[in-house]
Image 1 (cartoon, rainbow, N blue to C red):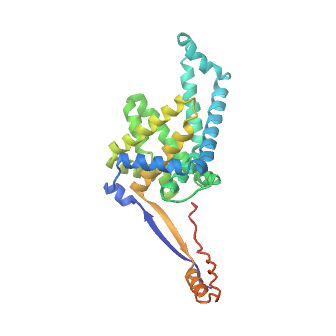
Image 2: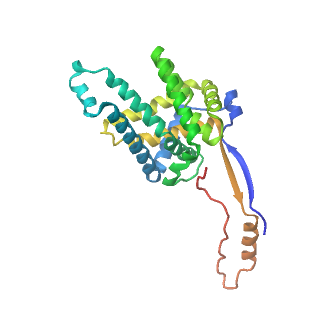
Image 3: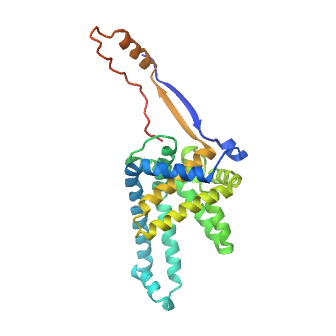
Length: 283
């Protein structure tokens, strides 16, 4: 019995090409493909997205409640701005930091699913847990990223926006390329600088989709969030590439050939053999 033949190849760009700026990233093409992927995988991807939003919302509310006691205080500040307590903003910042960090592994799982869609693979809702395998490095990347953005935002807000773009591929580099947190952030920053304008335009459009989703009482986020993740996956694929592994069964072709040669006189079509492969994502 022959062993399966395994062959790996890189789909899209590569780390070397990304750092050299040798890749294409056209905003219109990325947005168009992201929308197509969102529609194609809407039913299968939506449960994972809803689960991510729910987890982040729960963590945010719990973190806010632990600090303020009564979450309704946040709503009251919109009703009477004159009685606004500055500490509320600090509480919101801490709550936001908490849900970003705690939900980082689940976020990574959803990002990996969207990345696999960009590679032409299918996913299941259970794949949302794939990010848990990289829990510590992903959390570390998220913490460093948020802290740097907070410090930069206190000095020059524009720098904070730039850092959010510069480190946008760091989580996927940790999970897919197995880079260390610092190496992933540095690689993401260097690659992003090669096409910073195109990336900024793409994410600006995804942010507009978020705003539109919120205007629909939040229901539009079910489309806006997958759209964002698919755009992220396409950007990553074009810049750094996605490593795919093909597993082929050498006996499959032989068995198929034997079935054709041994076909019966009644012209009954042969039964196809197993190819031993799969188009389902498996990190």
